[in-house]
Amino acid sequence: MKSLIVLPLFTGALMTITAEASRIDDAARRVEANVIATRRDIHQYPELGNRETRTATLVAERLRALGIETHTGIALTGVIGILKGGRPGRVVALRADMDALPVTEQVDLPFASKVRTTYNGEEVGVMHACGHDAHVAILLGVAEVLAGMRESMPGTVKFLFQPAEEGAPKGEEGGAELMVKEGALDNPKVDAVFGLHVTSRFPVGMIAYKPGGMMASVDTLRIKVRGKQTHGAYPWLGVDPIVVASQIVLGLQTIPSRQLDSTVAPSIVTIGTIRGGVRNNIIPDEVEMTGTLRALDPVMRQEIHARVRKTAENIAESAGATAVVEIETGYPIVNNDPALTAKVAPLFARVAERAQVVNAVLGAEDFSFFQEKVPGVFFWIGTRPKSQTPEKAASNHSPLFFIDESGLLLGVRALAGVAMEYLGLSQP
Image (cartoon, rainbow, N blue to C red; front, side, top):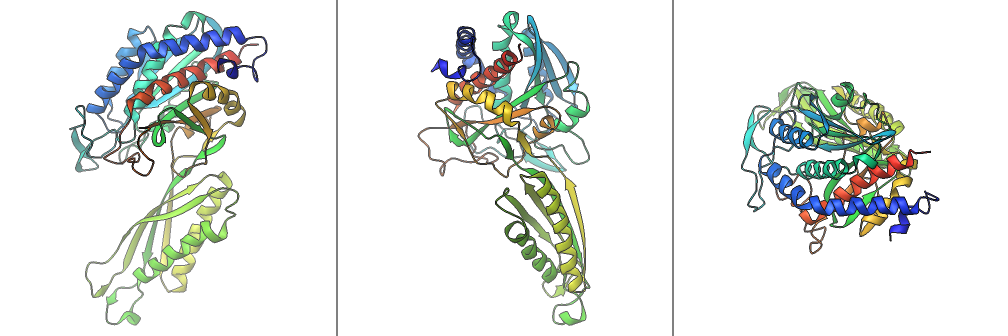
């Protein structure tokens, strides 16, 4: 199987690359127990976005103990480690997100989270319901593996431990966008970036990826429909914004299903909340709706924005009401560089029991802000128990989300492997 990683890409380098791959695999197995222990510690003490102080302290201490140049306070609580190899070469960045979610854990584990805190003015439970605890533990394992290979390593590895992937609290900046703004990809300048995400969609032992658009852009939609209040028994004396809002919801659904070429890429317009009225027999003055817009094509993304505005405003006008549409731009499309993806795909095939190109998803990830600046590849690592069906597995963001920790080793092997593969490719 080891010969699979090099024959399509590296002529005359089979012995060297196979030896390096074997070193990475052996070192990854040695750190596996520590990776699992670290994941459990972080899982038990989760922190929300821009508040990851304990996690950041743990990360910084581990990096410094490995002799890795360490910078803290990036994008509030982010940490950057810089590992310089013994030979000149390019710079590759590896990213792990650190934040948890305002979710009360329901998984029966000895290290389950009991943490509670305040989020946007409400008391909430806190849980690593998306697996970022695993991402941090995996990347610390990768740091340990690569630190042991620094003398023979060409180039430099930057470890990006990022806060607030799930979004910053109201009124705050955060996440990958702020890290980029504060120079996380500079000094030294990064040439390529890689990241992974654990998921219950796929079983332990599987890597899933896709060249091009892999995860959607995400924008927040808010529509205020203004009518004219009146008695519920005499609707003709007013303008009913509830009926108008209902017509707008139905009209918006025709945008992805009837107005856009669905063969180009999937898209979605979802209304998640509708608020209006205070009493059963009063037609209110105003209704407010909020929703999410998702796209996998940048041109289509802008077209959706224009069509949402036109649809809402015109439907409202036809009924004598008004509609004010606000669209808050969120994360860009996770766009895996096709050439870079093709170069690391053989590595995926070697380290995983199964490596597979999969369909894009309409979920979003702010890893895309890094990819807007440099070529990058983002991929999935399966952490669903092999005995469990996809239908039975709780999804990411569920209070029942569960990680089979035997899948973390693959994350270390894959992320360390793509870093060394890229740095090896950078040599003349």
